[in-house]
Amino acid sequence: MIEIHNIHKSFGGKKVLDGISGVFETGKINLLLGASGTGKSVLLKCIVGLIKPDLGSVTFDGTYFTNNKLDIRQEIRRKIGMLFQGSALFDSMTVEENVDFPLKMLTNMSRKERIERVNFCLKRVGLEGANRKMPSELSGGMKKRVGIARAIAPNCTYLFCDEPNSGLDPQTALKIDELIKEITEEYNITTIIVTHDMNSVIEIGDKIMFLFEGKKLWEGTKDEIMDTDIKELNDFIFANRLMRDAKRIEEEDREEEQEREAEEHARLEKNKPAG
Ligand SMILES: Nc1ncnc2c1ncn2[C@@H]1O[C@H](COP(=O)(O)OP(=O)(O)OP(=O)(O)O)[C@@H](O)[C@H]1O
Ligand SMILES: [Mg+2]
Image (cartoon, rainbow, N blue to C red):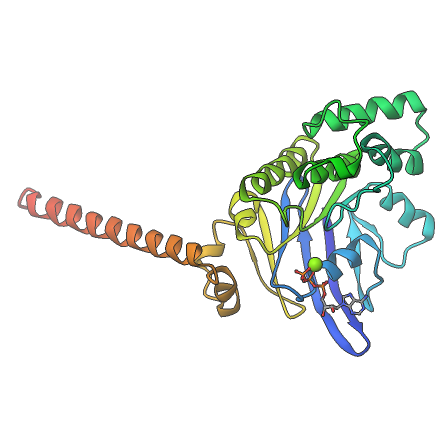
């Protein structure tokens, strides 16, 4: 479980994060949702320690991270896997070298052990045997898979993904989402995904935190998000025509159901034996 408390961050007098608190649960997909420029990536970077918040704290499974001693921070860092926006593979390295990179940096494994782990992770993301390929030979979806394999290679406890399915077609995007969800549940990882994709919300959002202009405006599950009456969140969700249609159909279905229930009730009342 990751807890954040009262995170503030400004850049040059411009407030980007304005006191955000919350909890990200273990074994679940926690989504940071919000429009472009609301501070999602900055918050993610504050949590992993790539940006130092001006105020506030982050705790990983009860261990205080922000401002703690370097060795404790490094110990936590070792447990963090990160999938950067755009995959960020090393273009001059093969797939195998990319996935091996954090193992070389962060573990004392022998070369043989590392290659076994690389092969295991590549297999897990459906890229068995792609070891010798260069990133330039891969499709966008395959690059994301390599990015995920690299993130989970050092047995991560915490997984952070910034827009993991941006730039992918809807079907490939869904496969990447599902892969992250499977891995999260299989290894009981605390996963935080930054997204503005409503498809991801509906498919995999166990818990969602909605950010708006640097504040947390709402949090809840994917089943609750459609029924919110917060204007900013509704504007965000229903900016998309498909989502508006989905909501309208859901409401019509609900009304029909209520009418049917009322009719059934009236029928039962009418047929009730007297007395
Ligand atoms: N290092 C930085 N220096 C100055 N300003 C920054 C820095 N990083 C982010 N910002 C500003 O903080 C704001 C929030 O940026 P952030 O990248 O977190 O947005 P986002 O919600 O991730 O948007 P997107 O969905 O487009 O990725 C932006 O106005 C951005 O210009
Ligand atoms: Mg971003």
